[in-house]
Length: 121
Image (cartoon, rainbow, N blue to C red; front, side, top):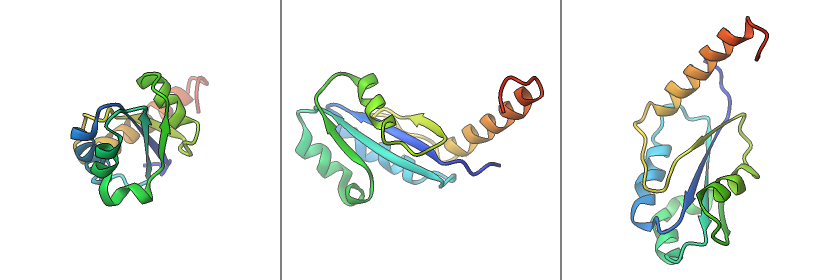
């Protein structure tokens, strides 16, 4: 399996109640070559949101911007992403521990299939 860096972007608006579980699910991934980026999209629950990030906040990129919606927040996160692959997770979502491992394996297999056609490498 390739060891690409996967950038995980989590837009957050009124997500304080859920974001702790979302962050934990990313940090618990069996595929560990990832970075987690949280984008506060002008959320009015900023204090609760930052508290919910808890001890993880100092170690992860955390951006604050005016609210323009989840898509714009994702794009803001992509602006600082370092990964060759990107995954998006909503603040109220969570992944099973093998999610990224399975997704990276799928991308690798798809790349091998299409490389023979000359479409992608």
